[in-house]
Amino acid sequence: MTLGEKIRHLREVEGNLRGLGREMTQQEVVRTMKREMRRSLSQSYLSQIESGRRPHLTNETRLLLAKFFKVHPGYLVDDPAGFQTELITDIASCEDRLDLWLIDGAQRFRNDPIVSQALLAIARHPDSRKCLSLLQNILETGLLAEPETRRAS
Image 1 (cartoon, rainbow, N blue to C red):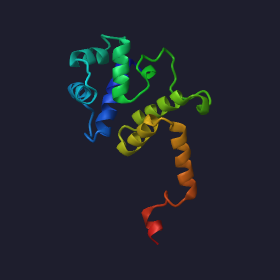
Image 2 (image 1 turned 30 degrees about the horizontal axis):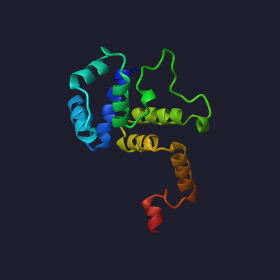
Image 3 (image 1 turned 45 degrees about the horizontal axis):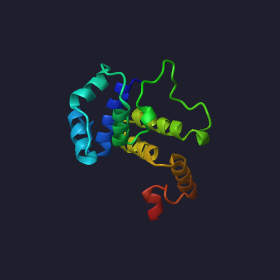
Image 4 (image 1 turned 120 degrees about the horizontal axis):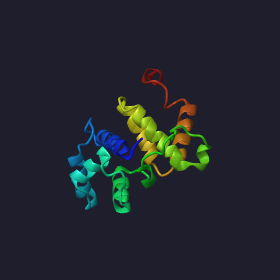
């Protein structure tokens, strides 16, 4: 995935997380960034990044975008040729890869906002592994994961 594709995807995810039900426009990202972070970049610069006319970011811009979208700065680069999104090593030793895997899952389920937002919330949490472990424990107790009709009886 290219940097531009990642930024476009993050705008879509951010719009859904903010309750817009659609992707944020570039202008909305710029305005929201300025309002919430007191720093921003221009809409034309963001457009150049997304279109691929600016294939590389300055460190300052990378950190600003990463902070705004709540992703690891290392995510904001073009994936190398042949890069695979599936995990190939132990998740326990690769927290960042787990987060990227969750973000990829959120993208794959972007038409299902509930699943997409849940995956992103886990990815954004400081300890994604603990979140998944907690989810496992909830499901194993059986009480919280039962359908409403079964709990009522």
